[in-house]
Length: 361
Image (cartoon, rainbow, N blue to C red):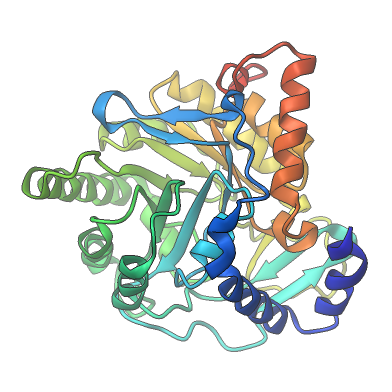
């Protein structure tokens, strides 16, 4: 209530990127108090989600996570962990620091509950993220790394950039998300072609297996690939991901489609939020059918409420992520979504959120 009536109107008077920077300052300032009580955390066992099998299984206290892009450099992970998230995703991080695209590069559309971003993987680089992560305490929830390639790295050398992400963050990451689907790095989505995606993912899985044998880490990090909503993923994509030994897919990244936005919306960049909701849910449903239980799905795109999250879960997502919904809904949105999920489960007599996964696929 305070956020929607007081804080949000003040923040929205600032440019989107300045408001985001101010929010990150507040989250960093809150970090020392994060462990006095995670007021937003839903610790109900009915919301727990376990992915993976055997010794590699990873448990999430609830299915609502923070999507990549909000905390690219891992500067506010402790503060964010106190807001009730079931997991966090840092990044996208590239091997070398890069400034991203020229400003302005982030726009709000409140009437459409949407954002457009053309940030361009602006980040401090792998070394900076690794150093911060190594200093951070155990947050009590899974934390993953979204890894990408530098803008000036040609696609025929992209595997080296992604391998660098695995190498540098292997010891801390609970899971990795391979970002080959941002619309803001020229040519990046070409890596989604099966003849390029298969070898790339296979090389990354091989590197993780090598580190497992050398480091004797108790659990292998789960591996996901993040896909575009602007293609028609189906059997071919699923088989490529399964054959590479990956654990799942994040569906989806932002879209280039401008349907539903007002005239004059920037032509460049990716759209997130409500305009993406139905499309991303449909893709989750199609992937769930094609995967036949062989892959875990993380649904992203247009999640603002428990109803939105439950829609994606019933379509086949084991977990959901929010970004635009967090910007518009504020720090209480995660708690509200989890409370709403518990009510929906009670209404349908589910004793575990995992039982609802794919129930309407």
